[in-house]
Image 1 (cartoon, rainbow, N blue to C red):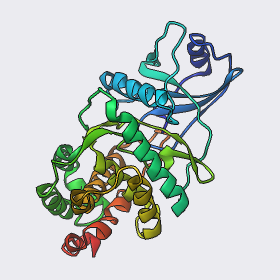
Image 2 (image 1 turned 90 degrees about the vertical axis):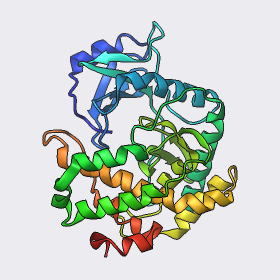
Image 3 (image 1 turned 60 degrees about the horizontal axis):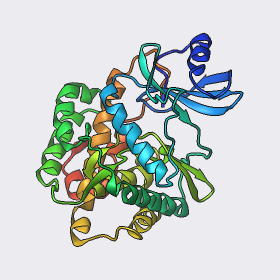
Image 4 (image 1 turned 90 degrees about the horizontal axis):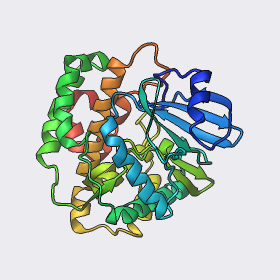
Length: 321
């Protein structure tokens, strides 16, 4: 979450008149994240999230996201579907951007998850995949493996501004990881970004799964690999907690036991997740507007995690020695 587009109190109050949610009491921009503009909105009828979709989220993708959220909510998952206005419309326009008013979910995102919390989150991801099994929507992964080489080229030699030698090292890592990328594993609708800050916890229980704006159709196990890389390390990527990683996998495997192919390919998928987030964070680090109310994230935090998933490759890379 972030704030790129400013919304005045007057514009927001007018926007809310389309809904049966009461009158505006307060609104506060949310700085975390890098994708969209988000506000925490309190009205006389309750609390909501207002999301304005910025350029990285295509307006044409919004019906897919909304349909997936509606589908998962109907299956009983703790997800925040968009609220329909009095005319039954979910996707609106505000300040020249597509916008949705979204149901607020209670809970907190944890910075240092415990094994118990990781196990619950793994089970929640498995529940999501099971509930999505009969979802008929389809969206290619806009940040899938085939997008990484073009993104690498767009970042170019500027990567060496982040760390000397990073451009050459990422190029070598991409070649090795993509050469063995699996294509024959189970596919599903996936979240593709289920970091700890996108899981709301109440104690050791999952209270909400949020921010589905990278959701797509891709390898089901890749979703777990992304989650493992996001949950099993400290925020800097220096320290790996195997107890958290093992609990996450165990929780997921209660519903989707690992096959031999899953075991063979898991570390490769996790290496790909490290590359995907290194590259997207590097692009944001190099290109985020200086006046945006947004928290930029260190690209090297995911680059460092590659050591755990592919020690042989890491030994060849100068920036990981």
